[in-house]
Length: 195
Image (cartoon, rainbow, N blue to C red):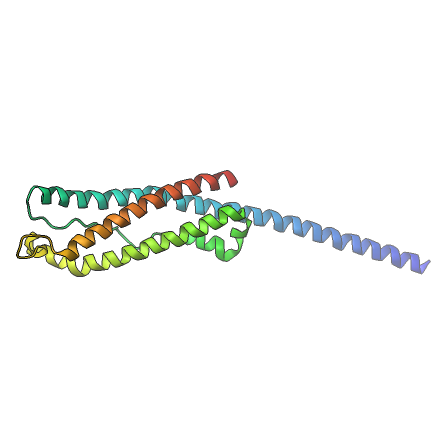
């Protein structure tokens, strides 16, 4: 009789502990899903901002360079076209970085996750290039502004090669920004379907 009673008590304890594990796993699963969707919303918002701001910045770079080219075609000496992105040289990537460091990125379908990783890697590299261009602007262009357009030209009246190259590199950066803008838009649309 005692053995039956102990077996019954053990069965009740086993069922109770098992049920607690099931409920706990269910709660953890729901919490993780909620956390994933919240993190995903952050990445979607980050990509949305990148897709709009990157195009705006690209247009600003191109417009300044075009102004200089028009003046040059008209035979006028002009300050080389340049544009400085307001604020940090690198846009925010905190939402993606948080998703990766928390392990939640693993819940994104592998192909899409890989494309996001490539995007953010390229995004960082392109802005590393901008950082170098911005340093040149601060070191070589801005100090000469007070001297006027002549400070950017040689004795032959032609723009100094370092400033022509600088504008070419800024235009290359603008073109890269446009590509990133399109890619950010595409990734955002795809992530919104996951949400």
